[in-house]
Image (cartoon, rainbow, N blue to C red; front, side):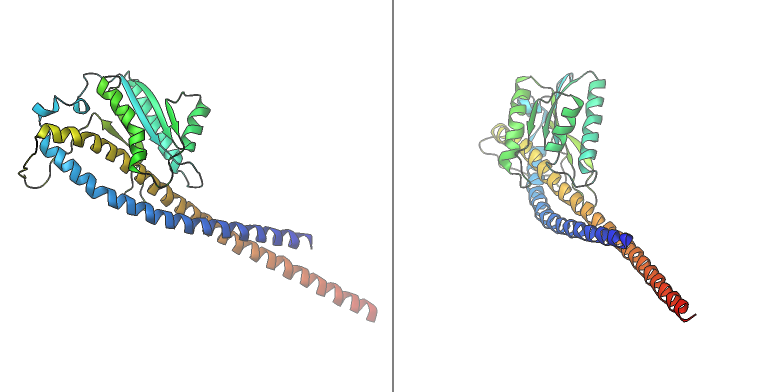
Length: 287
């Protein structure tokens, strides 16, 4: 029963694979919960920070702060791409890389020189395969990014922007809308564009004055934008991995059903053949 033994081996292999994918699905679901909690915790602070900046930044103030400087032309640009260090998360990394390549092509078509800063092994490996030079590469940021990680990524670039070495800095990341929707997105980090004010106007008591407050808030606002990009990308990665592993588990279950049905059919056919041979042999002895 060579075919039966072969089918039993395949059934065992698929069962082992299903155990692995189911475990990875459970791990990804746990990590996704922690990641989405960090996303939810980061948003209120970001909204409050943006609201204060939107109400304080006026044209006469904006002219005195380098991070608010709007360059006349955009010829030197830095793009920070956030990807994962690991795979097994469907098209998550592919979509982020595709978005980054589209933005790079768009900027270069306008005459800008783009320097690429990549976070994550998947993005680094892809662009190295293409032979593109990377201005920097990071693989040390874990699935629990911190404010210090965000500062280490962006502070050097904002300093260069303030000195006039760069005209803009963008970040490409996975925007976490829900567990089923994490589209790749590219946002401008600097120059800072304060969000539009919402709600009723508020009166502020400013101490010592608006200039000092805005000067302190601008770097915090930029770092928070990058931090939110990091935590949303991690949440998107775990969500994509959970979905991919669930699909793999479901496919393994479907394959097991088919293999077991095939094995049972082959086994029944063999039993029927053996019975027929026994009956035939007995009839030949009697006749």
